[in-house]
Amino acid sequence: MMEFAGPVARVDIQPDEYNRLLGYPREWTLEGRAQELADWARDWYQTYGRPSVYARSAGSLDVQGDSVSIEGTSFTSGRLARVFRDGEAHGAILAAVSAGPELEAEAQKLWWDEKPDEYFFLETYGSAVVERLTAMVGARLSDWAQERELAVLPHYSPGYPDWDIAEQPRLLDLMSSSLAGSIEVLDSGALRPKKSLLAVYGVTRRTDRVRPLNGVVPCQTCSLASCDFRRVPGAAEAIRYTVNRKALQRWAAERLSIERLEDHSIHAHFRYDGTTCTNLGRPLTFHYDVTLEPREDGYLIREERCSPAPGDDGHESMCQYLKDPVTLMAAIEREKPLLGQPLNDVLSWEHPDRSTGCYCDAASREHKWGLVLETIHYALHS
Image (tube, rainbow, N blue to C red; front, side):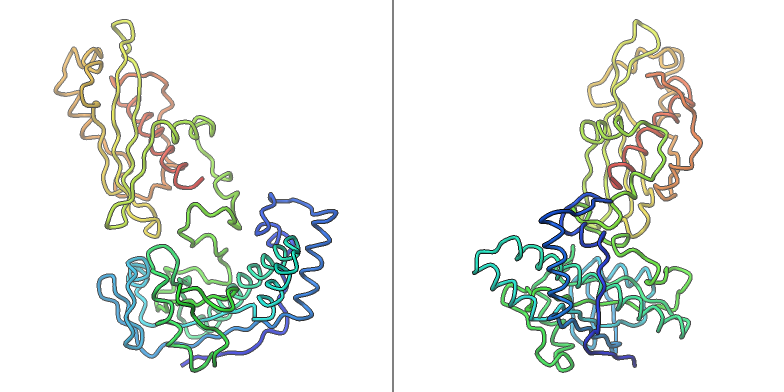
């Protein structure tokens, strides 16, 4: 069994982390009133803040379907269950971090004293403290696991996607005797102090499948795609596509629709509008349907299909269709590039660079598949 708990002597927040949570662009330099407020919030917390952490290994873990049972307490989260199953977790660690009640009390006082700027900067500093404490716990757990030839899976918490926040009280009950009332759950499921977090980590012997948490940026494992406060907002910009980003952005908005299915897989539908290479360039429309495994499974390409749009007859004017329609349409139906591979492989796929709008030759068809898969990749990672 592993357990540690207690106050944290000092929490150092990097300026760029604080700026990110304040909503400033990356590489932004605070100045004037903003810098004054940021310095004040940091100095106040270093003087009066009382951060604390807690973690212990759970006595038992059982995963069945979408249910995760920890020491006999059942939680329902398909996402958590899938991560534990895929990581072959044999155990779990319960953890809690808190920026302390002092910050919440001071923030409330600032609000009632009609000091919204000070309130905002101090509240945001509390969020940065929780993030930092969570990273510190993850690093400590990772070191503990490595000494035992184990690995720790990224944390997950009630209120995250696919884990109802209403289950937060049950998770706290598993730790309450050790936390001694320092954290409580409100009827809404929120925590008090609100700058706190309860989390579960999986433990696995499959060290080959898991990166050590002390080398992982937490946002790399987060499934909240719409977050405005990512630590790595530039990750998508670092990806090298063969297609101009403005074109990808336009196609993702105008031609692509993405649906998340009940089994957590992803269905992407892309509409391609082109023209024939003969018959004065008659317009044609093809539909691409791609099914992907969930993000945590690497967006593995499960199914692919390309076919003329319902009601389209422009494809019947393509020269190869006029020569041998059966062979052409069979080839279009048969071709499924990168099927069974991670979507990320499209970035290294050396497909032809052809700009023709028709489907008469294989190179042109491969080029279009490249456009489709890169657009889907861009939409999921931007």
